[in-house]
Length: 441
Image (cartoon, rainbow, N blue to C red; front, top):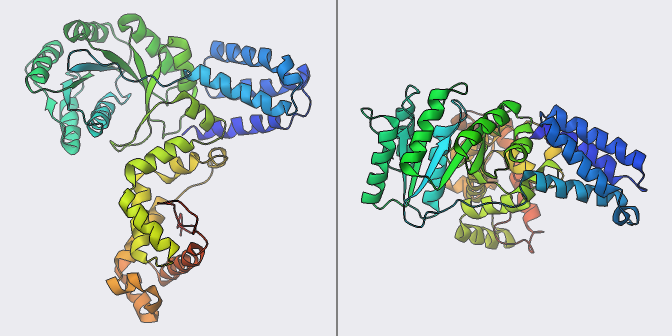
């Protein structure tokens, strides 16, 4: 996420940290680099101008000039200003006093509205809510079918009718939600490839019909300033309450994320960075600012671990680590736990100091498929006692997994290293990842 922006910011911030004495000249040189980075990331030029001016004003103040570590103080100012730019704090979804809470999803066609609607429904379902999805996009071919398919995969009901207008579908869905005690109603509305008067009239009519507690504008994070322009138009027509940034796992420069909140004054509430329905994050400005500056996002990483890691299994593994009783079955279980948390590049990018170094690093997910295939091709006895795997067994495992004997040897070598290092992990907390876990083969 934002690899290019993080990498360029990393260079600029590294120069700032090295400043031993603050002067207007070296601050100006460093801020010129930050200005360039932001403009190349397609951040709105007025936003950049104001951002740089605020940093410059604070960076030449007495507090920084008299500091023992002036460079670090300036980095702290940049961090604080980034947080302000992104919204200062997370803003939760507004709830209706009387259920259901109606959430209307709007945006241009292709921004990811339908997929986000399903992601949001699943997110709410995991939080013990009972959402109802509404297929109110009557314009795009197969939009209804797509939402039905997504709803089925998440086991979430979808209200739809091909015979009614979008406004009537919205009205009828509200009655359906009340009848069946749904506490959230999520309307996937129609978009167009470009801003369109008919589209705006329709979404305005839907707003009047269901009076949503939230109107979330979905912005394609890959479109840069185009997303900001369309957001401004939707804001003028609908006065939406929040922003969702999608497709942040793609080749996005990050300009939309840094501009859209400042231009519209509306909070970013969610970010979507992946194709799976689980790939949805609540937006935290402070955490995103830390990611952009290469400081990582350990809190989100911990939350992902808490969500996807079975605590009982983690404690059992911890006991086995301390007793040096690890088996290849444990190794495979850990692999499954990590893969549930998301793509490796995203996870590694949350580690402090790692994000900016990932631009040209390809973490081969297929290598993990290979590890899984090898272990699954072993007998139960071989998984529990890998030392019995001789030459003929290695050949059989390689053939059964569609890999080479060298791949099998490499995995066994990594596992032996992990077993040795496990003896040194007696003070590691429950569920810690044993050193030597294979991120590549």
